[in-house]
Image: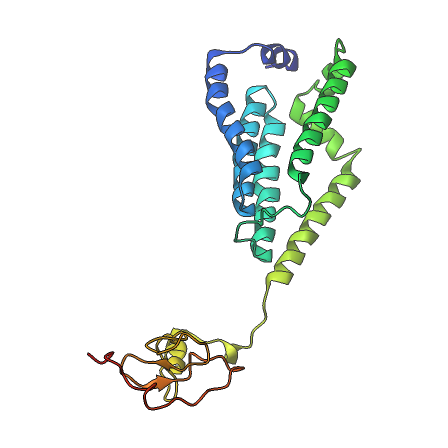
Length: 256
């Protein structure tokens, strides 16, 4: 199939292309909205992955297999996964705070964003209206993939290698920062952890909270264990332990 045939067929919408569009277009839109409205940064990145996958399929349907594969392999498979790795590295496993430091900043951001998008869209429409692409036949004489490869590995080979070195350096740096060096003797397996927990002098159960089986809700009051004994494990170290009278230390029916 020649390049002219591919470009001519790209303007026609077949039945399978139309069905694929109506299936993936809502998914791409849902992914974009989920990326914006998700409170968790990791969830937002995963929604963006869904949108990028749908865009890759759209590029392939529009007779652009190279840019479609680049969209899926490079942006979705490499850059987004690296972005998720960085999110996991910094520990963004909770929802972001929605407290506004400036009142009305969210509404102003939405209005300004819509205005900027309208200006860009209007400018592009007026600049490209009636303009026909020139030079595509010469650039795609042997095929779209071959034409891009020729430019990528001849004219722009330095920028290509520099970008790849930058991405590799970022990946190695992230792995070095995430790596925690531990001595072999400091590593504890499950058996060693269990023996240390049940070693004589330790309390293997959960620590009682302040006021448990006590006659007062003060944090300075010693907690009472289920067997009736007093324990100071529920008292913060900075709080002094007050002396209790015999009436206060009585079980008061809790032993029944």
